[in-house]
Image 1 (cartoon, rainbow, N blue to C red):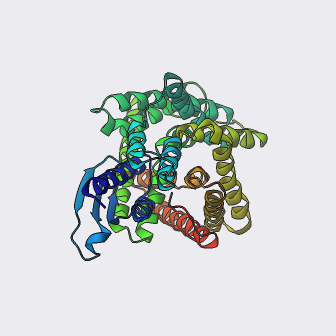
Image 2: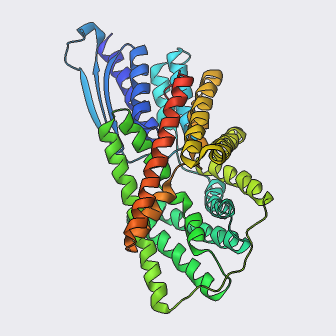
Image 3: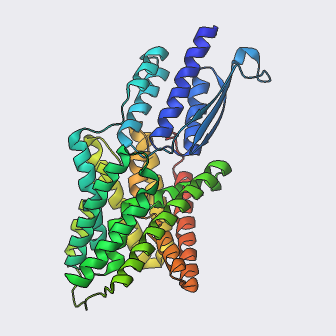
Length: 410
């Protein structure tokens, strides 16, 4: 191919890699996607993806497999957040280019034209979803009506704080610590002066959106597939987030003790059994909003969250929590690959929301919290529970890929 044609294909693949990373694609899936697209465009690629960088090298097949790369580039990128709508759009653009429905130059222009920002209505829904997620998780944790109301209110406050963090780069590094501090502070204040609360349940529910459970699961998946650099970096990033959440919580606990706050005696009854199903419906809707799915995919995303939760719930009642999480992972992984084969769309539409209620972010948070409280034995016990759940979930996803081999990388 001519030098100009070679450069055009390289630019398209590089922009495709940057966009996939930006919208939350894990290292093994991104590298497989890039290698597959490059091969179909007549390039011999070498790709390396980490949470903070992408390295790409390209050889022209006419030069021979032993030739030195014509182009090598290193892109510095920030860890991406899941954006299902944009991920589907990127996938569709790549498919149209590979099918020669549009040219490479036109495909590159469409990739560069994608925008991640939300409308005013979208921003409002994102903030509201923090509150919905907090209230529904409190209900799923068998909390009282007061717990549900408190977790939802504090969740809304944290949603507004997240909006500030997005627009102020100097505040973003301390956002998780400040959010956990405020959540614990207000939960303790309400429990000591207004109405009895299960403070720990309210705390976990109100900051559940900030828990890095999905990041932990992705990190262990990357390590298990020998993407050691990406997995290690992502694991350390998740640990840093858990540390910030724990430090903020401990600071609020110490302040509450200094003020002499003590929880009111509680005789509150948990929410009725039917509330679990209402909470699950509301939670799955909030996940569709938080993962920025397109409106036409809301039913699919919500159904995927139901699939993972129900498979795990009933399997856990039958054979224990770890095996329940394993079967939940198998069900979600298989369903994601079936959908990707059937609809020729990203399996992430099923896989990501399907495991969100299974990921053990809150378990890791409790382990660090107990460690800071100097309860070493309980901290270690919780840490082993975290490890068991992570292994079970990742093993379930891998077995799901064995039952239904993936045809698509993302």
